[in-house]
Image (cartoon, rainbow, N blue to C red; front, side, top):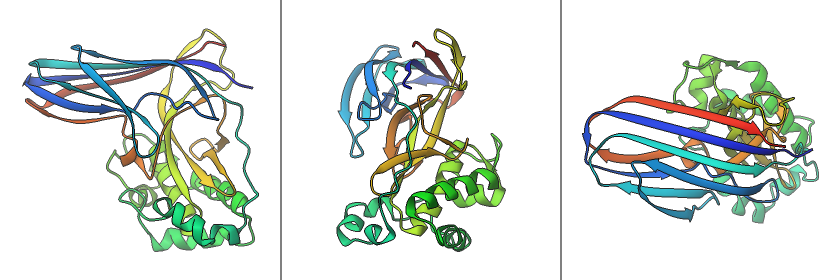
Length: 280
């Protein structure tokens, strides 16, 4: 069953002193592909700015803008309506021999290699070997995701945006970003191409139409086991109508919702809210 969902993602900054100029990139526009249909989307800023839109290397819609007028506050609102799809079924058609095929390894090399957030780790590699044994690639993805779900405790504040999968594993705690990163370490150690997905999650599985809930930015993984499919290790559930896909990449660094540079005083406040309404 599909949903029609409205997402309003608001980010606000205040600065200690006047900012004279800033340059920014925003990744908050949901994807429009076989998994979901983007009906309408806009990004608005206060103060108003001239915007540029492009698609990045990973196929993510990016809104960039620069602000050269002096300002002490900046507000960015991304608003979208999107039709999501039903639950994603695991794909089990790929074998371990398929994953070792030279052309496939060459095609997905970037999604098999370690990164800053998804580094190699001997202990996690040993876990990956144990989880892989006797399993098909598709089932290994499910088992790895379940293992991470059980191993980590969901605890905001333990890790930060700069924490790697190894940091979260050592702490035994983290948030959705960390669950995704640790899962990616395991899958890549198995030789399964895997990527980081950012988006939004409606927090009520039985959400009623017209009801607005305080949602959240969310992260999960996609793996290639004969085709691409997603799974949410934080909640140990299949990706479904409550998940709104936004960006893909190797790790969090490729999908950061807002990043940029500015000249001026330190930011004294950062407000981020995500309001999600199931329309139908």
